[in-house]
Image (cartoon, rainbow over all chains, first blue to last red; front, side, top):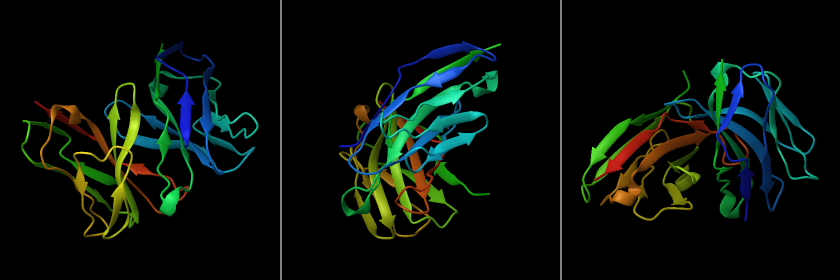
Length: 115
Length: 113
């Protein structure tokens, strides 16, 4: 079945540091890949996505490239800010039986950025 | 404003007392689903609905029911809550069941004592 594995947290960085959160996936078809972010006390919101191999998703300074050969979708940001402190979820969507494409989530990585 | 609204945000209840968590979306989305979020387990899908009157089980449906009588509403029903259903619950909706962005509600933190 489909699954997503992302690096364990928590991750603590100083402001302006470089961020990488690793994400690898297993899928039976040709999935779309997503990063969702959850700020404290809020629901998840889409950060970026990529729908096919070699696509790069980007938003708010974050980037991730869909690497089919390594089944990876690592999240990166060149210079983090305190406001980036949140929990980040890698997810995939693939067509399953009957058309259901439940978003399959990784377990989440908590990022804390200190000034 | 496009949004998914869940109520209540917080709920403490006792074992066995039936409860309903409401979910409403204003984006005319066909696909809606419920997830629970637990520490160390991430988000797991409980139930989903492809359209009005079409619902099906997700990965962890035991102890839950849903209904989809109108496109905008997708309530989650716990007929006889138990302590192992203490969790953070999220409703989500999307335009299409395939590859579309999911919009999430703000969550309902449920405690069953």
